[in-house]
Every structure is written in C-alpha cells, then in structure tokens.
Amino acid sequence: MSRELWDDIKLFSERLSREKDVLVVSHHDADGITACAILLDLFSYLKIKTDSIITKQLDSRVMERITGIKKSVVFSDMGSGQLNLIRESAIDYYIIDHHQPLDKDDRQVNPHFYGYDGGSDVSGAGMAYFVAKSLGRDDMAHLALVGAVGDMQDSRGSLHSLNRIILADGVEQKTVKVKNDLRLFGRQSRPVHLMLTYASDPIIPGLTGNQQACLQFIESLDINPRRDSNTWKSYVDLSLEERKKLISAIYMRLLDFNVPEYLIQGMVGEVYTLLNEEKRSELRDSKEYATLMNACGRQEKPEMGLAVCLGDRGDKWDEARELLQNHREMLSKGIKHLSDKGVNEREQLYYFNAGGEINERIIGVVAGMAYGAKIIPPNKPILAFALDREDPGLIKVSARANWALIRRGIHLGNAMREGSRKFGGEGGGHDIAAGATVPKNKVDSFIEVVDEIFKKQLTGG
Image 1 (cartoon, helix red, strand yellow):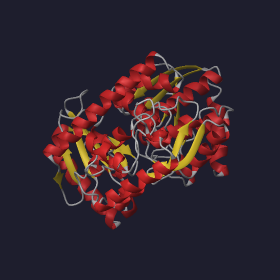
Image 2: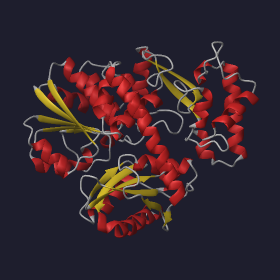
Image 3: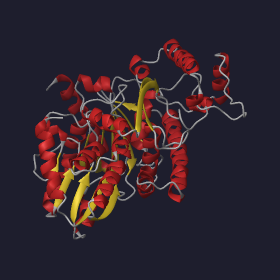
Image 4: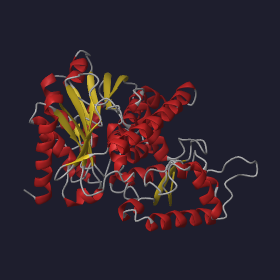
C-alpha cells in the first residue's frame, strides 16, 4: 500500500474515532453487508453508539430518510459516486468507498485517488477493514475477503494488490487458508454431484442441470461419490488424486464443447477457506459465504446476513440459509425466463426488458449469468431492465460485462452514470458491473445513448 493512502486513512480514521453516535449506510450486496459488519464491529470496539441502514442504492429517496436522522453518517461501499447528493443534504458525513469517485473530498477515503482500481484491487469491505485496522481493530480480515470475492475481484483466479495485504493478515491470524483448487460453488456444502449439477460459472455442457448425468460422470472416473456411512461426499472429502482427476475431466469436457477459454481459466485458482467456520457449511468457503450474503440482501433481509457476519449461528443463521434457497430458486427461474424469451441486440450491446417477471434485486445477477449460460456471446456488454417496485414511473437498469470487454475499453459505471444523467436518472458502479435508474418511458432512448457511449469507449472517442 502506498504511504500516502495509509497516511490519509489514518487521518480520516482519527477524525471518525472522535464521533459519539453514528449511522452506517451501506449497500445490500455481499461487499456492502460485510463492510457494514466490519464497521459495526469497529464502533463496538471503540464504544461508539451505532445504527445501520442497508439499502440497494443511494438515491434522493434514501437521502431524504437519512437527513431526518440527527447523527453523523458513515457511508460504506457507496457514496463516492453520489458525493454531490450527499453534499446537498448538509449532513455530517464520512465516505468509505471503492467505486469511481466524482471528486476529491477530505471526508472520504477511496483507492482511486492513489492509483488503485476499486473494481479489482480492493473492495468496499477491504477499505472498511483498513479503516478498522488503522484504529487497532484487525479481527475482520476474513470478512473483508468475503466482500472482495463477492465483488468478483478474484474472477481472474486470485485476489491481488491491496487485497493481498488483507489476505496475508487473515493467513497470519490463522482465520484464512489459501490454496489453488477447483473454484466451483458448493465445494464445501454440496455433494459433489450436486456441485456439478448446479454449476453455472462456467456452465458444464451435458452436466449442468442433469443430476443423473453428473453422478455417472463422477463414477466413470472411478470416484466413489459416497462415504463409508453411505452419505454423499462433498468435493472437500475427495482425496488429492480424486480432485486432480475430476478437475482434468471437467477441463477436457469444457474444451470438447468449445467453451470460451476465458470462462475455463477462472475454474481453477485460489480458494479461500475460513478456518473458524464449521466444515462443510456454507460459511467455510469465501465464495459460498458471499453468495449467502448476496441472497440475504437480494431477498430484502440484509439484517440476517449482518447478524451472521457478527457471529449469529442460531436463528438468524437458519433463516439466512432459507433465504439462500429462495435466492437460488429465483435465479433459476430468471435464467429460464431469459432462455425462453431471448435478448435483443444493438451494435455495441445486448439488452432485455424483464418488466416485472424478474425481481429488480436479482436482475443484474441473471444478466451476468447470461454469459456463462451461453445465452449471449461474450462480445458485447448486456443491459437488463426490471420494474422499480418503489416507483412505477422508473425502471432499474443493471449492466454486466466480462474482463475481455474491459480490456478493450468498456467501463459500465461511467456509461451508466453518463447515460442516466441525460434523462434525469441516477447511475454508476464498476467497470465490469454497474446500474442505473431511469424513467420508464425513456428506456429506448437510454439504450440508444448507452450504445453510443460504448462505441466511444471502444474507439477512444
């Protein structure tokens, strides 16, 4: 970490530590929930009175609610892109964020001002962790890693840059173990054949969605899918030789079916095991932990995820697991809807309008899964539209891309911000994942504008 960034974090944190009563406002995804938990833990440690609000986005409606609360407000995993809105509210604020900032401000810490990319070098939870660490509280490195993984910052096979500092802390504290292995979801908590059945990143042709075929595939490799007790083995129960055999067979199958190389490359890489969590639980693996947090947020129960992050392994943990099951079912229905209806195409993008058929809280996840499910090719970004349930006159936009597009010049966050402004909407986010809200009757015009923005990004215009 640069000396300048660390010094500014310490100055920021010192001012923050003098507060007596704060409100933490954070995003509703895995990164935002873990960031909020890290800050709540910090403020408890500092004996600062704290309340929290977790929201899907920071807009004028949320700001109206916040301004009625007479406390200093700490924005985490949001705020840098809404700085003008925050300043207009005349509240006493602090911003701990990693999204593309609008302007420099001594009331915020953001890695972009120091040459780091908030989309890949550090997450919102990571920035919250550095604030906590600067004040003597470094117990939550594992949660910061969950936030980074939830923000897909390991999607090229490993975490890097500022995230490696956090990883080193977790390893030193013996709360995290890192090794290279298969990165499919469910390696801890699902039987091996179900891990393959529900594989979506990447989709495994002929196996994903076919439980019987997955069992036969495993048995064809001379791997016994059952333990001596006749219960199903999870991936972590396999021997090293069995794991190598399974990975090789999956890899060859993907090649045989001409799955794009960029999808295959992310299948094997670093996995981050959380050593204080129960073996074979959804919390043992950072990717599964992050998915659980996302499920809580997108099922409108972020407080369940927050409670789990802060140590609840009782009723809230049980409820969170139920939310995860509901989340999976909603995603499955969303992908089926998209497969049945298909997408529309413009010169520089794909798009689909789900209306009220796919919940606005998961529309972005479904859009991202469209690449892995091969519903769309990887050559263009995709925009997904869903009704804003709080305001029938608005529509929610979620944009997703892949790393190949980012390398060519696509930046979704900038496109969403610029495009939505033309229609009085609000938007922003990362280069690879972003969102916006625009008037419902301006969808076609918005698509035209964003298509032109993408064209300029790709040509350097």
